[in-house]
Image (tube, rainbow, N blue to C red; front, side):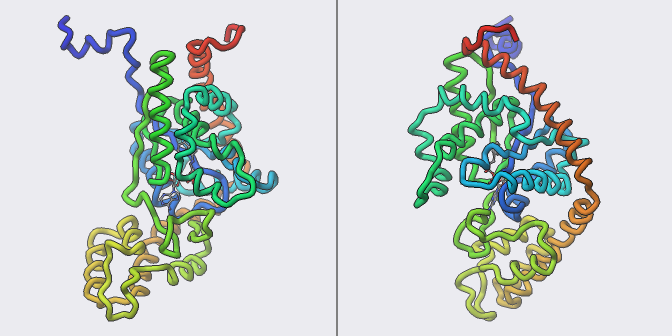
Length: 346
Ligand code: TYM
């Protein structure tokens, strides 16, 4: 066989194994599921599941949520609430693996091992750490090492595709670097995960100033009652140059148009753009059309959510954790072995 033959690579015992496509992503059970989560991530998760091609895993990352001050009883309740919301959003446990992070202990174990190959300096550069820690009296070590746990979440399942919003790209880059460092030092155990962005990877908040975010209080929550949803959308910030109805708007700079791109069909989008730039519609007209688009998406989701029982959800999470644990156990065997850890046969 010539060295150029494609088989030459597959037969090389030191070459990393060709990864089976696996999708993994997670969400923190804090605040409420909002439009940024939905349009930036969860809707892409649903699409990945519906495509049915890759193995998919989605996780409620409760261990990430304890890196800032929190109430234990509230966290428990939020874990359930997020699991219900995700299932209502089409993260169907019959078709995917849905589980809670702390039900699979290997996440925290791997995080500690990966900390040994994660450069301290890189963690200090993480934007989210700087934003969340800024001006706080107490900043936990967990907030600093948060991205290491995130790397562990992904690498534990050797995930190759990670659908996230833009704000997680920096963390994902660190995970990729961690793979390179780990494999270089211990051998080809992990695979480099690739981010997958939606068409709306950065949904701005109602204030129009910063990203829609639970911590900024500028969200529209996905399962907000229709009337409250509309009241928030109605007052949302638009193009700052459109002070009166007769000012022509700039759709490319308007967060409302960004959302239209996600929920309205192509014809509606061009109608909106034309009426905005030509100052034929006011911003409220444009928002009314957007609201119709959201309603088309949300009515079935609300109905599904109403119909879900907690016992069904718990059963699904238990099954999901069991499936996840099986993969996690295998990875950890490999990791302990290559790192020279432990004294007992596993
Ligand atoms: P979290 O819980 O903040 O957000 C969940 C997902 O929603 C996306 N998102 C947005 N997308 C667009 N516009 C917005 N305004 C917006 N706000 C949130 C986030 O990018 C994310 O994809 N660290 C992660 C959770 C995590 C994770 C993981 C993700 C932990 N381990 C492993 C992927 C893989 C976080 O805090 O997401």
